[in-house]
Length: 255
Image (cartoon, rainbow, N blue to C red; front, side):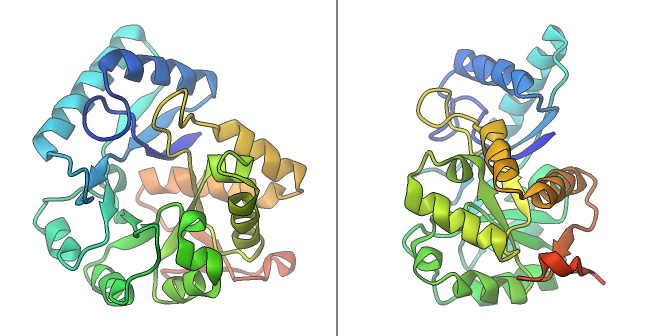
């Protein structure tokens, strides 16, 4: 299984602070049966902006330790890119990283809502052959208040990611209900832990999947895990038409 959202590289942002913390998180990842993790430290965030040279150095350090310990796990490069009007050109210039070198960009919106220029930025990214994936969509206040706002972003070519902890209920019942309503409406395509630490923001990867299974969302579990794998391959993602899962009508955003 692949985790598509993790703040696991040490000393870069509000995730792991030390290599020792990272090591413990990696051991937990193996226990959760994860075989790959896309490391996504913050980029262009008001409080955190990861230096790419430092990111690459820490990525090499972590994968070197994994190889030394012979863990069945690989860490891939990426960033959680904060929405900005300069993001498309920064990606083109190599000043920001996509997810595992693919066309997919993990896009972070302000938690308070959806800025007016979000759609134009999505359109610019699509024009440049990038596909934005909205991070933790269920925790955006604008989407919580009006889920149709997320559907609008998807109609312009974006995809959306849900956080395992939200599904598992660690952010509270209201966020859990929002997460499940978005999943029920087929507005979520990718699944990630958004892990920051083992105590305050743990993986909860399997806990979220177990909750989905409990709610008879077996098909969505399969879709999420397959799409996570497809990101590593830079392959097309499977997407179900909104609110049409029972008819089993598949479509492909690149068709």
